[in-house]
Every structure is written in structure tokens, then in C-alpha cells.
Length: 249
Image (spheres, rainbow, N blue to C red):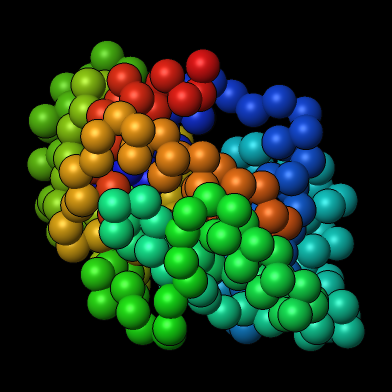
């Protein structure tokens, strides 16, 4: 698994506190609004919106918040004010960083992101400087829950998955972006425990880090993810789970 995937898995297992949960509501709400603005407010006809709504439900986001975010995107002026774009840069030891951003104030977002990079010894780069190091993918996370992980992996491949990675009882299923919803539905119909399904940017190669550089990278990513305008941070560091757990602890 990439560093981003392993870290996300550890955090799911540990859960989030109330402050983090409120921040997650803000970010997922923006994802819902942007998806509704681009593809309409009907989740049945807009797979990106459907995925965002599923994510909202997984973090126990109130239904009224979900409906409000859809309305903002589907017809409200507030939704039209949100801009979606990316930032790219380099962290400790040359780690590539790719940020997905949705904001109603581009100048504010740029200033906050630049400040975090500068304070954490990182450098913003020009558009395209690291994007080529990542491939757009869909990723479905399934927990085996006593079932044979290898059989689940074969089922995913039969359903059209590109790759399957098994880590204990957790199965990461990678798909082409357009196949994500079909593979997720296939897993769900087999009554498997689908933990999440979302779009991702998968690094083509990983950078190995020593503990000091790894901790600096996690600190940088954490500070970026604390910004409300930053929806997702992808990075290509190969960080040992023990270091991630040490940082989270």
C-alpha cells in the first residue's frame, strides 16, 4: 500500500475525535457540493455524488447536512462559488505531494497552503511537476471479517479490478476510475464489509524515508489536511507502519 493508504487505514481504525469529525463534515460537504454542481443533484444519476454521499454516511454526517450540501451544488449560488483545483510540491527527501482543493476563496487557500509548506521545510512546485508521478484510480477497501481474503481478491479481479493488495484482513481493490462504482456494488451485493470506496491518485513509485524524514512528512501532510480548503493530500512516501503509529500515538 502507498503511504497515504496505510495512514488512512490506521486513522480509520483509531477513529476521530469531535474536532476532527467536524472538519471532516466540512470537507465531505464540499465534495458533495462540487459533485452536485458538476453532475446534478441526483445521486442515482451522478456516481461521483453517490460516492461522496456514501462517504458522508460512513462518517455519520447528519442527513440534513448532506441534503444542504447537495442543494448548494445543484442550484445554489454558494455552490457555484466553489473552485476545484490542485496544488503540487515536494516535501522532505523529495517526497511528491499532490493536493486536491475546493475553496470559495482561492487567494486565501493559496496563502494558507504556501504557509504550511514553508513552515514545514517543503516547496510548492509548478503545475505538472509531480502529477505525472500519480495515476488516477478508484480504490475500494474491504474488511475480510473472517472470510478468505484471497477469495475476495479473486472476486474483485473477476469484477474488473486492476489490482488487489491484501494486508492482513484488509483488502485494497484498485480499479479504473470508471469501474469504481461497479466493483463497489459487486462487493456490496456479496454482503462483504465495504469500508470505503473513493477516487484516489496512486503513486507510480515510492520514496523510502528514514524515521526522521518520515515523521516530518507525516507532520506536513497532517498540517495540510487540517486546512478546510484541502480535500485530499496524496504523497509517494513509503513509510513503515510502526512510524505512522508512533506519530499517531
